[in-house]
Length: 438
Image 1 (cartoon, rainbow, N blue to C red):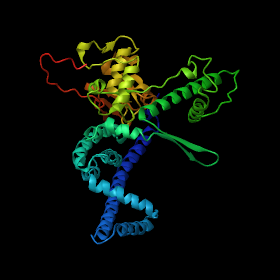
Image 2 (image 1 turned 120 degrees about the vertical axis):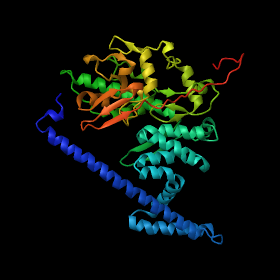
Image 3 (image 1 turned 30 degrees about the vertical axis):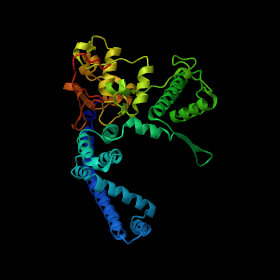
Image 4 (image 1 turned 90 degrees about the horizontal axis):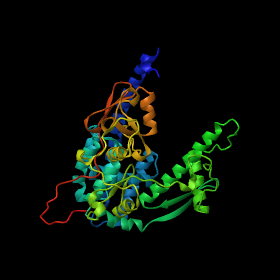
């Protein structure tokens, strides 16, 4: 494939995209300034309502009436319903007054709006006196990554700082599990199940695997000139149909994979990728565990998964353990693959959170061009970004410590550090005769 810069109109293309990127940066700064200014104005409106209605001789209901009146006045200018404005006033006060350091970092360009919302969403569940401490650590973490990448880590950080254990809070939340039916239009409805995250993730993964098996089989059959393709369903539609079949009949009504190597749909099982500290495995820590690419899960569920899986093994990042670090073949050995899954956790393109178990292990320096199959030349990329590395002008090289340095067609560089370890080991004080920790 020829680079765009080598084509006759390559220079014009690069000039155009350079201008677009510069405009995006400029507009982004303007938008951020406007969003911050609006938050401050809304927060001021909330404080005014509190001051006017907060007199000790004023009844609570009258105080609420003052806020409603201000919200209606502001809503008339913004052309937004007064209920919406009142809600946004509350959110603005939480952000501006509760997390001022995050707002200052946003204003300085260190982080973006998505980071601030992730910090507030995670931190708001903590007691207010812990917000400054949480905010300080969270901002430092946000400096190095995109909002969707740090969201899960911030949630885990907040859970670990909370005075009540995650296991205790999860038990209370799990009591609210339910299934709701929300009628829609044109004969359609939303069936919403509120379930523990790991169960929801497993359900979605199994449906996705089954849908892909059907779609892939359909594509193979469509390539046969003797077969007329009659199934034009999208992956989402197939997933929804299999979901209905499984709930109503217990098995897929139509197994489109029975004649292919994909195997029966019913044999497909859910997969989830969980990272858990050794202390959580032994039961001495009730803190949250990490469902890679998603959000925290309770330690009891993580221990159940660890005990039931046939793939469980202890993995140590230590040269003395015999972990495979290199091989002469192109194929990545299973032990090395598991080590890379633990190291990478997700796709290593900046901002992507596709879990490593759904990614491909890529040779950073192509194997066909002399790249070796070794840990220092391997990283997980999802199908989208693996293809982009192969067929566009984006380039990548791997630095010490598994750091990936991506270079865009415009020459901009983006460092993709190895993910923050979900497990941290600290020396423990031991005494003669103490039993082994596990």
